[in-house]
Length: 207
Length: 105
Image 1: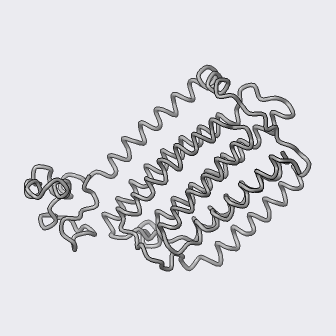
Image 2: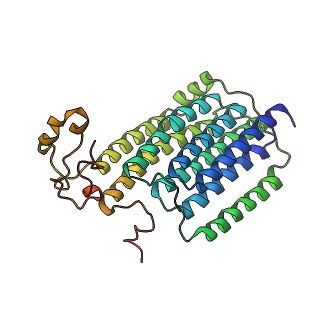
């Protein structure tokens, strides 16, 4: 067992334990923080396999942006912060399916790639960029277009519809309450059957 | 490096993600499990890039480029997914995926 194997084993143990904790933690914020560890372990495994650019892109995109977005999602949906039962009645079925899948996958992997080795020669960022912007240029532009479309789609989905809540010029009541309250719509004029109707002034759709 | 380690790591991540998607109740936690499954796929792509590079060579770096694409698509997916979860919360006052059964037969 060589040195890269040991490093990979470390990422395996750390990331695997963190991934299991992500799906079993009873506290939702702890689950999001375990997801950070699991994704950092994935980035470490990219590093040991010679994919340096991918490793740092993983840290930037996932650990930096996606986890923050997920924490915002937990905050905006007022997820219960304390520990509580987070599993539904499918739990035994889910254990059986995922456990069976894991055993099947490991059996197939060991039978097929038991003695195969992975080339861990680092791929230089310059080489990856040259290939990406020449041979893969069109798919790369399509990916950029997809990101633009998903940004606009997410905005359209998450913004308040006309008539669903107070119009932006109805928010003059909040403007004299200082900077923090100015961003929030006044709760009592809210005409939706919105979930936050009970606590005034906290509207989840507020920007 | 033995190919078994990264591939088993990916299998473990994917199985954990499948378990989370099937058993979690909170829609945001379901999204986190989907992220785990996407991470497993990227680990597999990078590992198979190394496997192919050690045997036949991979001049187009297909494995790493596809892993990069999966990463970008995952970022787009989590943005749209969270927008849908927020819409669900605004309309139904819950993020329990078991309560969103309007289209159940």
